[in-house]
Image (cartoon, rainbow, N blue to C red; front, top):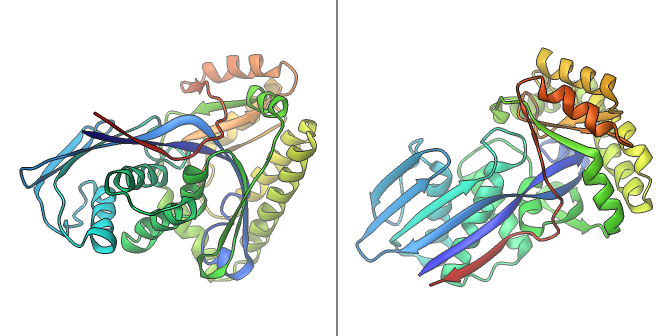
Length: 341
């Protein structure tokens, strides 16, 4: 028997960073994101030999352990161990024996929410296997707790909810981990045009988002006024983006993205660098009218809004810069799991 799951990665269109504590606790956060047809996959194969095998195919890492109720957090596939430890603690109260195999369509540190989406996918496979009573909110919140509390990994809250729910969502974040997910009913022709005009580009570099996020957290804790003001404007950007999409006012999207990008650069050091700034300027010169880096910043994926037929000249420019333009479509379905013989 094989238990499989997949959860979609996401593009953070607006509000990114306002979902990070302590800003979201003090002021509330707002995010607008959309899931795409790139996924994190998980497969669980039950065993009867008292072993646990953890295999991240895309990372080329494989570890085997004796089945115990708690696996040591030692730097080797700790995400998987954190999930397993929490599942045993909260649901089974006994050790399990299985092989867990995973693969993600984008590299770690690429800005598409890979680690949180992977946690959500693995949790989905465990829920399918063990018949756990977890809805979308339950799944996302548990994934968040495993990453941010159990494993003490810095980051925000949006990725787990995007992976669990799927689609285009306006998300609100409040104190005490309160999250409200508002699905947006975007007309298909608007969503198709948005996907056509948004060019997704992998810079070929990854980054450690935790360092950037920690700097952002410290700026809030230390009451750094320019950073906090930028976060308020980023939050406002999410509301403006929501209204533009619901009204089908795609001519405003590039300007809204550019507004957010200018604010995001004020939130913490190392969000941008010379390579990113040069790519952004060149994309604008080639016909884009806005864009941003995806995720915390510092590297990974960027995307640019290219009105009319500007995508072709922008793609030609990007192809000369050593990265990779990535084809994608928006998807409306979140976490899925199933059992196969």
